[in-house]
Image (cartoon, rainbow, N blue to C red; front, top):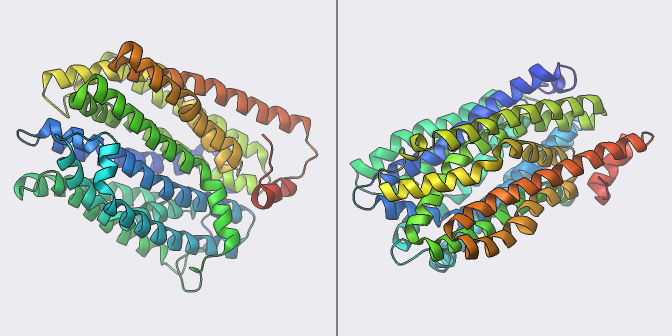
Length: 467
């Protein structure tokens, strides 16, 4: 069955709704999935605050692992969408097989290296004598199941790109439900504490992986898992890495940024400030993940129509995605500025931790209404194969802007300087994204005679596409 023809023919509004809504629900569920652990961990008797601090210092390791997973998963999913638009079914099929092989290799390798160097890594990332025990207990289990995480996330993205957005949503929601059931059992009933939260996380992903694999094994689908597609092809791997380099750089930079944030907070606020960051990050990331769901819905539509040489449809889906993302991030601004105590109290009832979290959240979201535009723009360039532009937008926000501010601002304003660094870098990155998007469309108007086929050739074989 060809589940992708509608990508080039159906009305963009209804098409984006069809693909984005399941992705938004899935990403919302994924955010809740990450929040569930923090909510239950924060209420462990006597050690909830320290456990939250321990969990927060594991973020860089998880970001580092996610960087490789995103490079493979996003790169392969985007490449599959473009190849489907070009009617290259065999190429899309082999891309799916290479996705599986690369996820297994990287998942095992990163998990093994992480286990070998787990304690030095945690100390480097900001763990203290009070929190390293909790961080170790959680991260040890997560690293043991790292290959499961990589395969689940990679195949779920492939499921969406091959015309099954509802199934991808179902898989993600199932992880939330299963994790929410298992968390209190392992944490409180079995008395396993933070270890129980990690076990519940991996088991939930394992159940979802089984479901996703079963869906992708259906021989009636145009693309499905079968023999003979798992051998790594140099050209395919190169294309996957080229397109996926943008999310890889973004996650890698996020790892560095979290290190600097943790060190700044440790110096100026101690373990309590790090715990506050864990809470604030969980709440604000909820809305960012919803915007990422919109981007996931946009990706197959933009990629397919770019490959099918229908630029008007590409532009239309971009505009609608920007509008949706702006509305979502405006809701984040309103909640965090005017009603911050309600989400914070889900994580803790400690008065000082609550105050720190509310103060930090109000500063961080000050640029939120504009951030959705920047996120969509970066993902748009990635969706049409313009890896260099997408990488620049991803890296500039964190490396060119955020890192210098994280070094300077905390020395002036202490803990509030850490929060202000995030807000200011967001504002500058929005301006840069607007300039790059304007330059992209201005360049297209000036060179209407350039053929799409030539452009695609440069994207995948020479990587010299100019903005």
